[in-house]
Image (tube, rainbow, N blue to C red):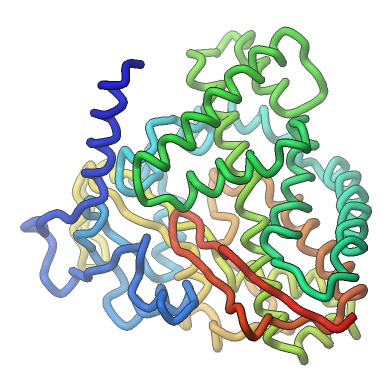
Length: 413
């Protein structure tokens, strides 16, 4: 692609992030000036507090930011959108619309076609495979703790959260561990950058790298997920190389970011709440239930859906070709679903939407649960008295995936 073409693409994408006029069919009472990339209140240091403010207004709102889009803020509506793919399509999931030019099946394919791509991924997350990977996660976690503990401090995000789950992921796709930091940099840049040139630049690097790997795996396949994806080219239903590169890009970004952020939010909470931390130490049997409560409380994804037809719903007039955002964290914090939703309660039996509902439920959820449980078991056993560094507060961000940029911890050696 010529340099002039790339300049045009960057200019188009940068324009997407601007503000637009309110359409005539959106009543003034539903309009809110909410920029999900920079929500008001982030200066207070917590992404969830910033999002929670949306519950002070209507259940469904429209914002002129980032190209203009709807936001559903209540759990019942989030589930409604997730489950009704005939109206709310996954074919476009980024906001602003068009901010990612790569199609990523099965995420960007609606039923029934999406099942053919899920079938490629599913065998790598079966109970037997996850059980074996859990053993590897235990050994890796213990090894990392042995390295970190004598130092009396760490920056948890880079020293652990982006090491343990990312190392596990690199084993699934058989990519080199010595390039972990480069992979993480690409992934974090793509997920968090608001400058389209930076964001697309990171995606271009990932695509170029994966194209080379997929060609190599097609010629010499192994027992790894990227080899299986490369093998789709030989399937009679193969439509084009965009399917293969799209699946690979989706797996790549998904494996580098989500669990790392969940571990970081959990650790930030435990560093601030000694009594809750002690209970997990004293009652390790509740760790599986605690894992679900953490997953409930710290919903991560803020993805979009493309509206396929006009719909009147709860006072909102959705129009064909508009976008609606589905922020999982808003379901997590919904006081209509949960008593005291902002509190962590290990005795709660929460049903949550963190891994999605309907056909697009996260394929990697069994491994994510296992990694969180292993972390809680091993970290708390080895380092029960960690706390936040009083001189360096945590930094969080909002975006397509809520996350933690830095989390300095200290403890007595």
